[in-house]
Amino acid sequence: MTGFLTRRAALIGAGGLLGAGALAACAPKSPSGDLAGVTLRTATYRGNPEAYFKQAGVADTPYQLTRSQFASGNLITEAINARALDVGGMSEIPPIFVAQAPGNLVRIVAVLKGDVNNQVVLVPKGSAIRAIGDLKGKRVGYVRATTSHYILLKILQEAGLGWGDITPSALTPQDGLAAFQRGSLDAWVIYGVVVQQAIRGGATVLTTALGRLSGNYLVAASSEALADPQKKKAIGDYLQRYRRVLAWINADDARWAATRAADTGIPAELYLDEARRRSARPELVAVSDAAIASQQGVADTFAKAGVIPKPVAVAPIWDRGLKSYLS
Image (cartoon, rainbow, N blue to C red; front, side):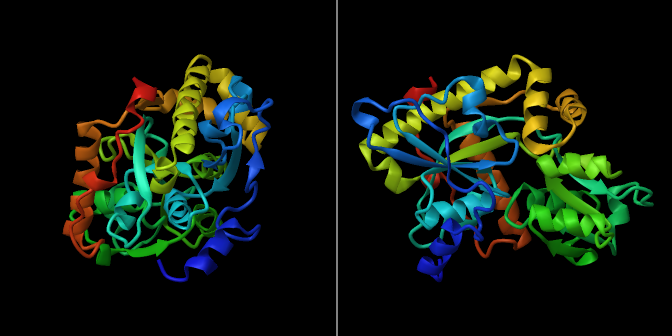
């Protein structure tokens, strides 16, 4: 990566990529034992499960846990490579874009199997767009190097269209929301909490990622953190606690919707609707051959489409060293 020191400063600055809520501590109870001196720097997204250790009753980590809030997984891979993070979640896509970069530190250590129906193509209220083929000649927003990018590529292929048949606009989720709301986009490929914000404003779902995404979301760690025995142990403990948060979420949809609503300001009924529509409940599992093969398929699709300059072998960026924590 170019401008390493500048990028790192931007990532950890209040106005940098980390955004609001950067480095908010999780208030652990009196750390003890051999992890007492460890600080684990983790990433989260607004309204995502990993932000709710306290509510799920698992915040008593034997190490210091700090959180930084991000808008997309591509920024998390950048932060790991800038040595500003130890661990964070993302889809299959962002690691592909950094896999061959000199000095890449991103290593995938676990798989979060989850919903793909919250990854959607939105059109504004009253739009005449009724099918994917109607996107020809239209302005379509997406988030580069994320599931959004991949979904857009896939649906265009399905409709017999190419990148040149639309006017693509690469935007961050929040910039995309602003552009969508002011009418600057005819369609928007997006994910996460902003989907509910847009639907609340009258947007409708043209299609979802069902049948297009694997449902594999990844937990990645820094190879340097994994090389430190104490940090590696802390990451393993973090994964176990994350799994317990998911069990807490899956036990009560209404409680989870209310918790997210209180945190984000989005009505709980929208989160309940999302829960009713989901393709799968979240589950954290160990690295597997099938998960690696799934990501390789995505990488091959990007290479064939010319989105990345050359084919990428993804197996070297996967690490099975924490399997025992998820068995």
